[in-house]
Length: 387
Image (cartoon, rainbow, N blue to C red; front, side, top):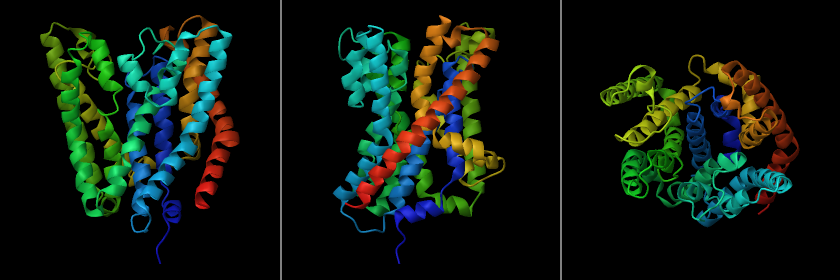
């Protein structure tokens, strides 16, 4: 008798994944508080986790005969009920606040936020003089646009491509990731000579980072083989470490040859302006390798991964989506009352305010999850199960 995808997932839930979500969210908040320059990598961890989780669902249903259009619609609706309602509630809260402050310029971004194309608006500024990037409580929402664009296209691999071709196609597009970044960066360079803009144009582009999601997807597809050979986890760490060290050494040498000395020689290697000398092509490959190693380590429950399944981390991870949404607004409020961004305060004060923002964020996220997100998601699943 076939086991339903829902039952299969229920029996094989990986609590450590929620622990990783908690860490990813904390990394992002720490970066926005000026404490963790490489905290942006938490977003890439979210990407890999998303690819892993949604692929597990598709793999569980591969032997179930269903209409492709029906499965695609169900997938998109499940994603809708989980992501969109609280996303729009967050936007509405910001609209009310902006109206109260008589700030109308950022409201020009609403069509892009609503259509999940905000990343492209922030990159290219389709509306001259728009408020793209001027309202910090909207600034992080470009990542949701990247995710939704991936969800729109990923089912082509998960549903349309023949089952026996899904693994090689996934591998092909992962390998193509650095190539896509190379050609994309070559195309955008003539548009604007500013290296900071070019770095962000790669950073926020969805097509440049689908390989991060697909790496998580690949791990889900080969998960049974991983459980049978833990040495693959060790190999993933070794490859990531070697590639990471080679990358850092190479660009440290490039910076020194350009005249940088001391701490300045370490700039724009893993944080800062990630553009030039093809670092925008290679760094994200290194980050993906590390996120893949972390994910495999957690999935296989290797040494120390038990910490990820602690009750606190699992709980925080389960509500991390709301936390990710609301932390930026809380940081703006902190800036409003303090008179300056938390990231510009002395380090001891940053640590104090980071702790406060993190605790308040978790509290708001719990309220959001307990009384809105979870009920809406349950309601959506109930409607889908009856269709």
